[in-house]
Length: 205
Image 1 (cartoon, rainbow, N blue to C red):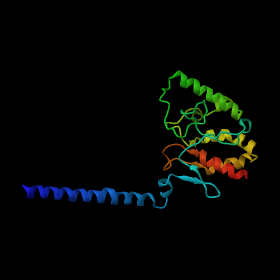
Image 2: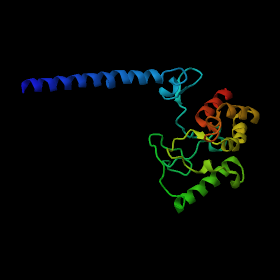
Image 3: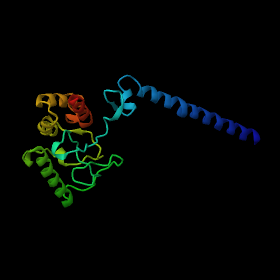
Image 4: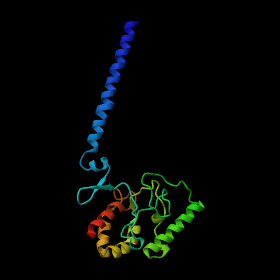
């Protein structure tokens, strides 16, 4: 009996040691190594964005809707609204991620969307009918850094006017912050607002 008990204990210890080495050492090292293959390292480290001085200023994966010092002279591109924001347009709370869970027939949601459309149209000086859908609907996470090319184009004239850049210069910055469809057919083209606003700031100086 003692021999059987010892044999079972020894087998259990060998399995424990083997899986500890496999799952606790080898597997994490393999994941770390794959994550730091050239081309993947930035994503593995959080897709950190650095300014011209090499200081980390944010992540390209997190959209932060900027608040202008003077609402009448707003030099920033704006991201999609967030369900976590206290007002209709934000800014959202970047420490909270989540949608509103309201259905498309919820009257409060419909009223908020209409309010956002009017406010954005007023800010950009355009007809409310020209405001694209992603400008007035919150993302599932509330932290989406990407907007549609249509929403970026809607903001070009205002950003150019406030920053003193030409509209062609601003459009070039939009183009540099843009991404096409994945593999050429998946998803929709997007513009990363976090990267774009940093580029606008750099172009102003």
